[in-house]
Image 1 (cartoon, rainbow, N blue to C red):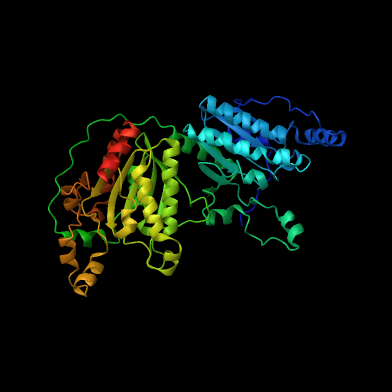
Image 2: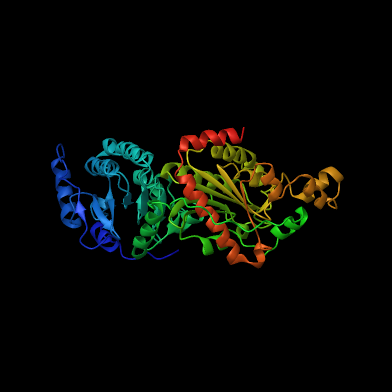
Length: 493
């Protein structure tokens, strides 16, 4: 486990991350009406210790010149616990950020809701969550940095609702604090479970980032999310696509040297912020989820990663649940969604069946067809079975020349029809799986040529694809979403 550094106060974190001298507080003195004499004394002592009048400070600042709203926890004030006054302060800050159309950055650190105030403080977590739902419904970013420790009602409300969530190295993060667990169950909570690193391994946070790197991450993220977009300009004519035999295309798509999503991003993307997992306890290395900018046009990318798919770890249902998280992000952030198909096929195993693979394919298809966001699909390589189909429905579909799509690998189709694999090439031709056939059928809109094979010209090919994506995304971003959805529904009826 990574070692934690010295805990930073709320103001020290603001000074570290935000532009110098840019902080403006939004806070007003908390209402202490009704506090008992003993509790009032406790609050006064906490204020002297922490140097803040509550466990949360709110305000605005600039980050690399960009105005943002900020909510930061202060652990020195009664272990960062949230009472009615601090909860009200969070709600007011979220509501102001929404009114002023500001991205919101939160850095909670808390032992949970304040026991001295009981249920009245506890139920404010629902009001905080409601305010954040309104903020996100307005298409405004909500970015979270979880600090050590963040537990209880805070973790179960505003700590877990970020579009992007990263955590401090070694931070204790969880719903039930270990001291409470031990008191209730009479034994220690298992070590290593409630740590930032374990949550990352289980797809619950997007990264583990030290405080001195948070500013750069926030800057890259907001640069993507707030990108104005490229103008729609005519795309330079693509080279002619040569007529290559179907089986030759299938064979070329399987070359180990063929570029996948990571090389595409290396050569064609302007900015990339990788995300991680479903946010619900799963992650699959076969799918890459990221915020990406091609030129100045942003998108949410969900891509089948050929490097992450192996015979022992094929694409599973968790990958599609992670993809569906990406779909929700695109809709919430009002960004185009780019899906990338490159898979030898989804997992065929008891675990995949018990994990609901068929249902996840169905839900992915339904979500994509109805998604209230512009959608673009890129067929980059192999496109086998339901795992490939699950990412296909889109407003526009681009295919690499040697990409293909089929219900089964051609060898599997041959086994069904001919009871051998010797007729795989014939089955591929008969099923019209190659990109040019898909173009003729109206399934694909653009075919990007390979000269003669992406594996032999990886950088040039990736840049060629990138220019097509940039053009398509810029055009899609300027369309009426309701019109796109209606046309998409008609296309896939």
